[in-house]
Amino acid sequence: MRLIIYIILIFLLYRIVRAVLFPKKTPIQQKNEPMLHGDETVLDPICQSYFPKAEALSVRNGNELTYFCSEECREKFLKKT
Ligand SMILES: [Zn+2]
Image (tube, rainbow, N blue to C red; front, side):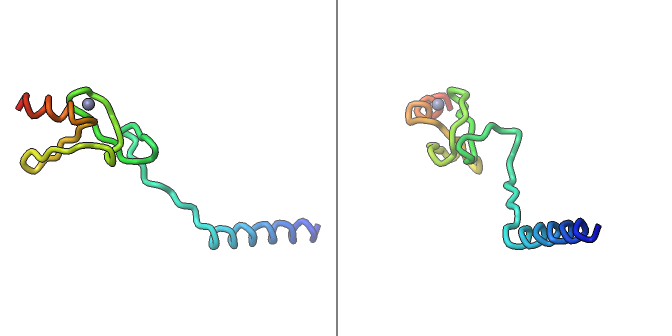
């Protein structure tokens, strides 16, 4: 019986040591938007497609930033407004 208690204790100790040495990183994800490559995605109002913000072209419209997938979409948006 004692051996089982030792095994449980060692197992618990191992769990604690592992938790201290390798804390779990829980990434904060926004689930209302589709994720691409783990980056933040933005919606192109012209072609209605999502793409990574890092690749986006942006236009400042007052205090708002609007993002576009390409120069073409940005041109279309600028002509519309
Ligand atoms: Zn586009």
